[in-house]
Length: 278
Image (cartoon, rainbow, N blue to C red; front, side, top):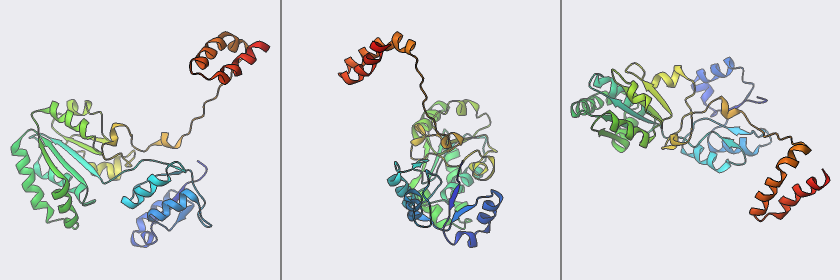
């Protein structure tokens, strides 16, 4: 890759030295202290001090996402993502306090975060609800988390594992946790999700900070057709076609028929004129 450019809000390097440490460890040489929608605009169109780029990736608030949507086509982007989401499929073997903690870990991101519990036991649902109320008071960001739980927190009580699978594939969440003693049947049949976390010891936070491979994930049901950001997103393909006179003589008549069927006689002539001289 010819250039890797990082933009970050002006105060972030002072307020969170870990950002500066990460840039140093990665040996990133081109860093601009700008953030928000104007950073997206600068990267897309270029300025006197910020040369334009070819692709913009990474998370941001609703203004950043809106800016990415508007510059798409001028540059490539990863996806329009956010707010964060988690759907947790849980059975009676998982401690309700663990489930509640995982729901709140997403809820503290953003007051519009989606936090969804899917289970087939009213007892589990009630116990998790009580734990959420208790643990909310322990969070530094409890005001944000409470709004997320109130505004976008849903408990789905389904009949069985099959209904849970169907619901997950319909919702297509950013993160899916399957907190079950034997999660494989459920996880093996999940088709629409940004990332799937298998088993009671794999909370979403493991993926946030450590497990990888990427935590730029599709949200808002776009996991039906988008994948997580990965190496293929930074590769570009070009079609290369070489044809010989013999090949054109063999297949040219077919190509002419396709062109004539579309009413594109100029297309047909570009083949015919070559066949006459072959």
